[in-house]
Amino acid sequence: MATDSASPKDVTKRETNERPEKTITPKPFPPEFYHRFLSDDAKQRKPSPIRGLFPLEDKPGVISFLAGKPNDAMFPFQSISFEVTDPSHSSQSIPVSITGTDLRTALQYGPTAGLPRLNEWFVALQERAHGRKRTEGWRLTIGNGSQDMICKAINAIINPGDPILIEAPVYAGVLPIFSALHCELVEVATDENGVCSGDLRSILETWPEGKQKPKAFYTVPYGCNPSGMTATIERRREVLQLAREFNFLILEDDPYYYLYFGKAVRPPSYFKLELETPEVGRVIRFDSFSKVLSAGMRMGFATGPKPIIDAIDLHTSHANLQGSSLVQAVTLALVEKWGYDGFFTHTEAVAEFYREKRDTFEKALQTHLGDFAEWSTPDAGMFFWFKLLINANPDEEGDSKELIETKAYENGVLALPGTVFLPNGRKTAYVRAAFSLSTEEEVNEALRRLREVLVRERNGK
View 1 (cartoon, rainbow, N blue to C red):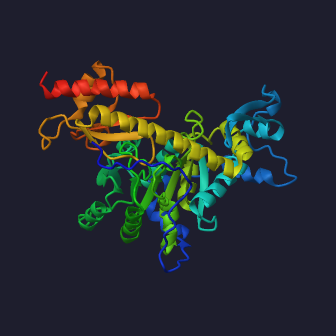
View 2: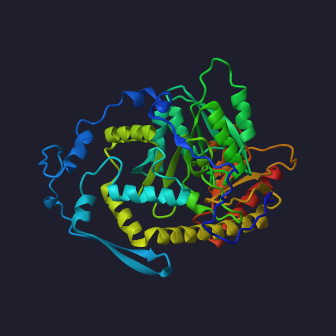
């Protein structure tokens, strides 16, 4: 049974604009503020002796022997052409071509932070989407998907063994990153309103005296993977207040920002909300185009205070030099063809598509598992997080792991048991199901099969 039966119908770019009565002119932190937040590795990294000099090539009249760039005359590509959907007329397509100087740029080594025109397009996107001015001490860098950026940001901030605040359940993709650093994972509870800020306050106020305090809190605030929940504006404000009180950074992993389809006004991002505070610069934001353009293109970017983004770029220059110039050029050609209005129109259509998928899945949940499961209705993303009532006694919580991994799979259903999203791997009755790909017929058949498994389990067979 659903514990939140909201049925959103509208998809808009609306966003709550509630602001405190007192007008605040926030100031960015000085660069030295971030010294305590940088990891030992980040402090020890030195600029590449070659890439660090790339900007010098831009001086007019300079003849450069600097970089070992291959001569583009030997590249076999003459042009790259493709078609994209017209955001205003989804049944029509728009031709896009990359030729001349743009093609030569696409096929060559490029700046670590990304192609300048694309970086600038993203900066202006952040200004439009989050109301942030570029004079507020932040900058942006482009990477191979937001996961690439998250991994490098964590390595820029966290030393081996450091404590890190994370919401639970948590995106399973970051657990190996923390595990490799042998971090102490400090779980913060979540509910249907997102991260439980009261639990976070309790953790911080009772932190053992003399023990190193957490430098960062990791969160997925919209359509959280796996829980599907979106944090309310009240919770976000409370987290920001705690970040000020206890001096930590917020790692805002937001791949589902443009997949918000809730009926209520969309709450602002942490990146935007920190404009309400006296200082800005505690939020490091990670955006992904995987859900709205292409997952295989691996297009993501990080936005945040300059010293942290600089540390990410140093890591990139050592690890993989840069994100793919070709992928960036394709992305640039597409977004310049669409413009910002076209981009937002497209993302609204994407959100509406997933709202319909959400509604289809929830209807099937109610039909087949209404008496075997509990859930809250997600307002963003592409996941349902539901609790299986495995035992007839509702006070006795079951364990979804064996049931999902073995019995359900043997009956033709594949999903993820909730334990993989819990840092300590504890027992849970929760299951994560992605509703992004399956047809209505597939959803109904899968949940019918899952019901069969639960009936047999209840009957002890």
